[in-house]
Image (tube, rainbow, N blue to C red; front, side, top):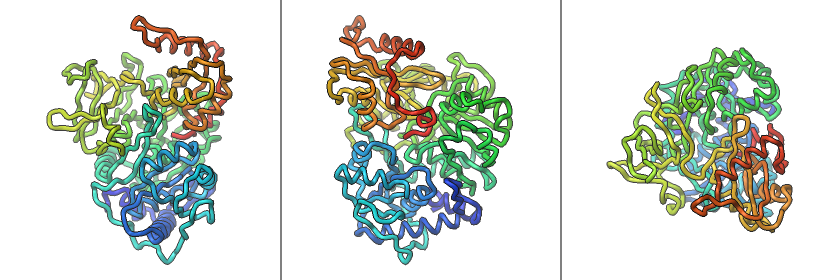
Amino acid sequence: MDGTLSGRFLRGLALSPDRPALRADGASPTYRELHERALTLAGSLLAGLPDGRHTVGVPVGKGPTAYAALLAALYSGLTVVPLQPAFPAVRTRQMIEAAGVDVLLAADEAQPALAALHEDGLRLPTLSPAGDGPMPALPVDPDSALKAPMPVRPTDIAYVLFTSGSTGRPKGVPVTHANTAHYFGLLDRRYDFGPDDVFSQTFDLNFDCGMFDLFCAWGAGATLVPPPPQAYRRMPEFAAEHGLTVWFSTPSAITLIRRMGGLTPGALPSLRWSFFAGEALGCRDAEDWAAAAPASALENLYGPTELTITVTAHRWSPVRHLNDMVPIGAVHEGHEVLLLDDSGAPSDADEGELCVAGPQLTPGYLDPADDAGRFLEHDGHRFYRTGDRVRRADDDGGWLYLGRTDAQVQVHGVRLELAEVEAAVRDCAGVQDAVAVAVPVDGTVELAVFHTGEPVPPVRLARHLRQVLPAAVVPRAYHHLDAFPLNPNRKTDRRQLAARAAAAMAQGTAAPAGRGTTDERQNGAQ
C-alpha cells in the first residue's frame, strides 16, 4: 500500500496525525480528520454502487472539501478522473464520456458545475456531501465507512487526466499506480521534505503538477496551502503569514508576482525549495526568483502528462545559456532517451525531438486511435514522442528545451493543440476559417486568432470560446482578414501571422478578448 497514492497519505498520517493536512478557506483539517472523512466518503460511495469496476469523476476546486473528495476517491480503489468545475459543461461531459465515468463524487464547491452538467443532459449517480443536488443522489452513510483504503494492483489505473486533442476532443491519459510509485520514489530520494514544510498549491487538482503538490506534501506529513487569487497581489506577505517553505508553479507566476511588486531581493525568505514547470523558464526569471528567495534551492522541472507529472529536473545555478532559458535537466533514472531528426528517424546528434521510455510512461491513451504518431518502438523499448525539440546541455548531462516541433503550445501552463482552438473558432457563426498563433508576452505565451468570413466582433468570439475552452487559453486578441497570407509553398504563412500578432500586441492595437484579469488567468483551469 505504501507505494500507492493512498499509501503516501497514510505515511503522512503516521508522521503528523494531529497537524493540518491543508489550510484552505479558513479550514485546517488535520491528517486524522481528513483520513476519517475520506474513509466515510469512500465507503459510502462503494456501498451505493453495484459490484464491478467503476470509474469515479471528481469535480474539484481548491476548497477543503475538494481534498477530502479526491482522497476518498483514491481510497475507494476505483479509477479517479479529476474534473475542473470551472470548465465548460460541454468539455467536462466529453471527458466524462471518454473516461467511462459512471459515478461522481463532488466537493461542496462543485454544485454549480453539477447543475450545468445536469442541464446539459448528464444523469449520473452522485455522492455529494453538500446535500441534495440535481443529480441522482448517493447517501453519505457513516456506518459504511471503510476501515482502511481499498487495495489496488500496480497495473491498476490510479487516475486519468486530459490533454488537448488536435481534433478538439480532449485526450485521456491513464496513469497507473506503478507510474506514480516510481515517480514519487525518485522524489523521496531527491528531496528532504518533512512535517515542518508548508507547500503552496498553485496548480488545480485536475492538472498533473497538482499531484506533485498533494503527494509530496502528504507523503511527508506536511501542510498544503492553496493561494487564493488575491494572494498574488501580496505574495511576500502571504508566504510569511503561512510560513511557505516549498513553492511550485508555472513560470507565469514569476511575471505576475514581479508585476505586483513582490519579487524584490529577499522578499520570500521562508522558502527552501522552489519548483517551476508547465512552461519554459527564462534565466532572468530564475535569477529574480532566486534573489527574492535566497535560502531556496530552485529547480526547473519538465514532463508531459504522458510521462507522469515531470520526468526531468535541473538544479538552477546562475549560468546563462545560449537561448537564455534554464535547462530542463537530465531525464529521471530508469528511463531511456531517444532523439529523432527532422525526418522522424532516430539520430545520434545532440539535438532533435525528445522521446522517452521507462516506468513513468502511460500505457497509452484511453482511445487507442490517439496513440498513432505519439508512440514508437525502438531497440526493444516503447517511447513517447514528446514533440519537444531539445539540445544536449553542457553542464549536467541534461537537456535544453528549444521549442515545439508541432502545433502544440503551453499557455499559462496548459498544453494544447492550436488546431483545437482553430476548430472552436470555426464553430462560431460567421467564421469561415481560422488560424491561431502563440505570441510571447511578458515572459509567458498568449494566443491570437486570425479569421476569415464575416467580421465577427471579438467579444462574440471570446464568449463562444469560453463555452468550449478552459479560461486560461481563451485567446487574448482577434484579427479579421479577407484571406490568409501564403508562404512560397502556397500554405498559410503562420510565421507572418505570428509576427503580425506580436506587433499588434506590442502596440496595443489588437482587438482584445476581455477574458478576465491577470489573477483570474493565473488561477484559471489547467
